[in-house]
Length: 183
Image (cartoon, rainbow, N blue to C red; front, side):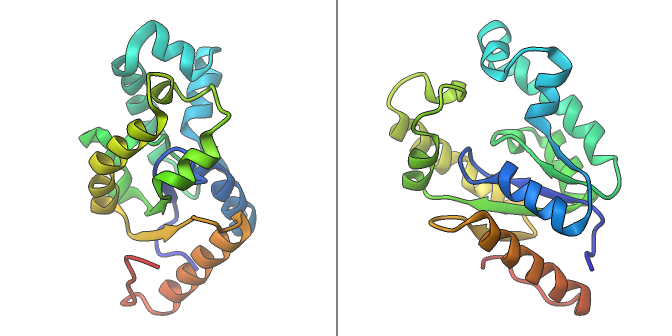
């Protein structure tokens, strides 16, 4: 059914990578892994604590190790952190080792979804809307560059997004030449 055995979800915070990833893994009967959750499990502390003690650079080093390891597995659904695409090495691991899906969300949608969260270190530094706007402007082209499929999650349920992705994967399985960058 799927051209590549792995499904990798990329996109900004609040786009639904973890929720959609869990649903896809369930529907596809594949293991689900969240790279941020694995980092927290291995370190025994949450991501904000890592940012506080090691800075973003320290966190990104940990993330790169986890992404390299996870992308070598076979048959998983992986939700990455929003900044995973900042590393060229991560992109080199993600793109050829799985089907990469960019879950897109507008800044307004991200604000609504992350509004109450204190667990987002990058949003605890100032004007949340401006931070998300700046992150989107910089990261959107990077997400698009490695994505095999782009799917909007704005005002949609997890089930709706997962169903759209599954339909796309089924079409690809039936017709490998079919390609759709934006749906």
